[in-house]
Figure 1 (tube, rainbow, N blue to C red):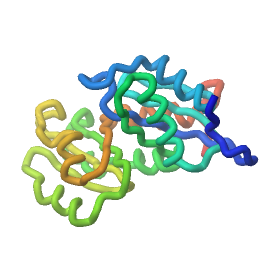
Figure 2: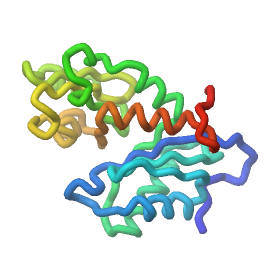
Figure 3: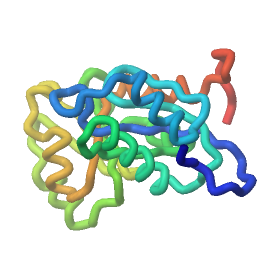
Figure 4: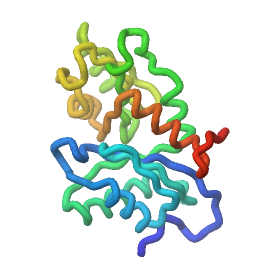
Length: 197
């Protein structure tokens, strides 16, 4: 069994893993299989949330790139296709979820967050901002794209694929409600009570 740790004594930390393009017309992956993959790697206290590929887990590894590569590799062996993985620490998730900068534009169900695998180039961010229209708006911060889709995400051409193409990075998108629910789950203790971090 592969190990998620290097064998040295490190503090155990909680992380969030986000998958790109599962169960939305692309890769089909049961969340119990996702959970099993994470546990096989060596992660503990694994908890998945809804079918879009979100999992909280604990590890004493402090290398997110290594964890992303391990998860992606095991998922490819499981489903036979490449699956992009983005791992975030809980402090990173908390910072992202503090405030959606476009919340004042309309209904909360039109707010989305696109998580980016890498920091995009400045000129690519400028290109994204230049392509905005009067319906869809974007802001880039904390290695995410905050978006407001005035006619709804499903009716926009400026979706996850569009953002990836412009910014030249892998990405995965969640609605604002899901982002906040993931933070709520991350802040719970094992007995279901909120914990302070």
